[in-house]
Image 1 (cartoon, helix red, strand yellow):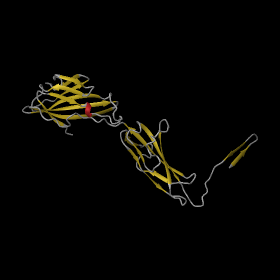
Image 2 (image 1 turned 120 degrees about the vertical axis):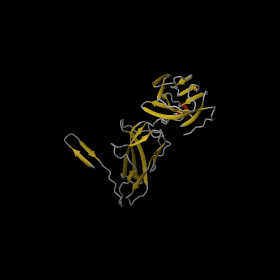
Image 3 (image 1 turned 45 degrees about the vertical axis):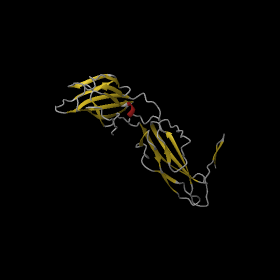
Length: 272
């Protein structure tokens, strides 16, 4: 204890210093992996499961058992993150289920203490940047499929497109779809490349167009991610590339399906 006195007041300050009969230093705990430099945080997607492992060097003759405690704080606001009670924060490793952390930048601290000692604490920090997960996009039928000529064709991207950052069961109403159709190959004649784009129910055509989506007797619902049409205007024994572009906030993902027009009514199988 130190005392300070002047002509009008007296102030005291105290510091408790542990004195042990055997040498004991604070545990040296280190979190495995990258992210120790705040300029180079560890990048993860919101849909990722996070596993943080650590190792501890012990230099203590009094005790060999260590108490661990994990804590997370938002770097911008400096507010602590409320970690769900179902997550064990008192082990040498930390497991965070997917979508535990929202988008942003975080500091994760591991504190460690020797059991039964006072003032012998070590800690290590890493920095995390949680990013948006790319949209998972597809078309029913997979990468390639056959469609019968003069049949009803459903191009369904909605059921195959997922935002993995949403909790299971949540309905996503923010994904928008654009469909592009391109004649890729036709037997017996050269093909002039033509591309037709369907966006919000309107068809935009570039190049030489003789019909793919724009001449279809179709029910187009690109906002819902589904196009339903007859194939009677498509060329038999020809191959078309159907591309869907899914957008949400600043994320864009694409998927292309190779569609072959054949006689009859072929069996539909998902091929990825």
